[in-house]
Length: 401
Image (cartoon, rainbow, N blue to C red):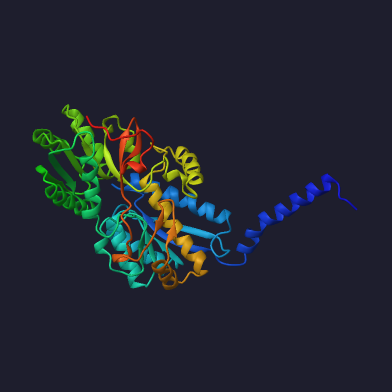
């Protein structure tokens, strides 16, 4: 006998309800997969670390909607390292020994990541991390980067910056290099000094400041007096905004300017940042947005970032690196059907992982693969890639004052 449409609809709804309830019933019978992290939720790095926290929450929520890992619910335990590498080291010890997490996810920024790697090595734990800037400092064979700047960024990434400038509207002849002493920032700025010399450019100023500095007036004055064509700013977090504010107070605007790892939202929304350059692995336009999972992630991030009152709700390099780290972890667990750290590490060394950055490999020095860094610029309050040209939106080119 043929069932009525109403009966069929009720049957389908009942089946859907039973299916939706299934994960909860299954999860109640087995422990969750616990993933431990620290992030700089307070201190000088907090503005950027909040992006990584939001991305992790988005990814874990989506994982659990899709059934978790290995059919088990995922719990993400996040502790505040206060932007202090020594504290990060202590907290990762706690995550492993007291909280007994199954897996680790790296913190934000090079100093804290190096601390986390040391702890992971002591306990033979896998560590995937998203923002380490000095690849040569990590020798542990069970750490894996989601920050795709290659194994020699002091040479390759800095050369990309100056190649972009050479092909831009006003190729510079004189350069000022000012930089934080934060480890990865200082390393890259030293690389920039070598690169500009190799290209026959003149360095007219070199200045350093201690990490956490908030007084940029004297630095702005020295830059103005040097009259450079281009200013390389070894910035992390809000350094870029503070320097731009200081330059504004003395009625100075650099012809061309670059900020290494700025807090993305605060910088792009600053009126003084028009024309500012930086590095990126992902921006919110084609061809990046055509990659699998990118459109859905962007849509969700917009909603959650708006609700969190972020100054900028777009997905860019920091958010993409964080999302990539979670993609790497999920891919390894899913492929191996294991939570064993060594099994996961062996898989990653032998296999590529498809991410919103592209196809990543981990078989190079220090488990790094290709340098995928591109050059982006603030144009009319938005980040857009300007080099290489095939990654730029249609009709977009580098601008200069």
